[in-house]
Image 1: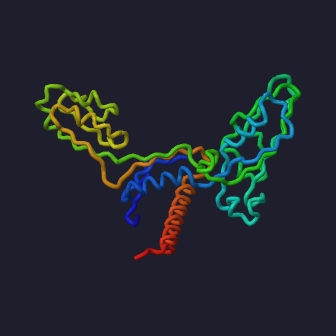
Image 2 (image 1 turned 180 degrees about the vertical axis):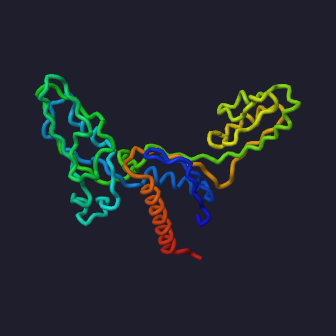
Image 3 (image 1 turned 60 degrees about the vertical axis):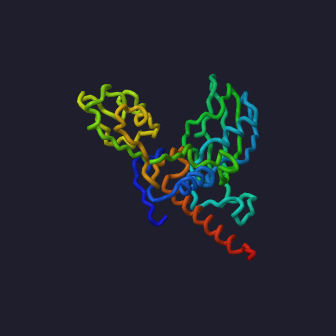
Length: 280
């Protein structure tokens, strides 16, 4: 991957799109799988319900708590299996969150993720407005919850991103000089689902300059062009990645951790190869 390069297309708190060049499809898929399943993040793993006057069963509330995305700090916390406490639960591998709400009004009261109080102000729900449960007049809910780092390959609640996918970088060669004698003016501009061909001039169609941003490589233009003026392919070893996040980790931390894990896997593989005895 020494010739790998990254070009950022879009980046904000929830979306990250970039072009990765100089990598094989195997490396691209390895990156996708690591981000999807092996980046550790915080999630509620143990719930103690001391009081529950709501109409929901304890198990339902516990499940809802576990699925609330929590902001994560990978610099401070460790996976329980890597912690010196052996995963028993300590300030280095565990965060406690409490919720104590009493409805003293005459109307039903909604309890949200923002009602959770964390013993670490950095480990809090990414959104304070996630509904948890509703209680009636004079009802009460008292909850203790404990969050730990985990991996999405063990449970989806520890998934670091909402979605990640990559696609080939499209390349379209369009010779519109062949369109002058075409009896159909212009078929491809009508059939292209992404509207990549502009025929507004009523002379010859043109291919939009930024067609690669939305082209899905469906090949409908190449197959249906009467004059065979279009050739659709893709750029070798170049992929467009799109990552959607719920905000548990900044994208910088996700990418950094991804390549740390990737290099650890390579080192482990090399070590195991060296231990293998090959019979001559």
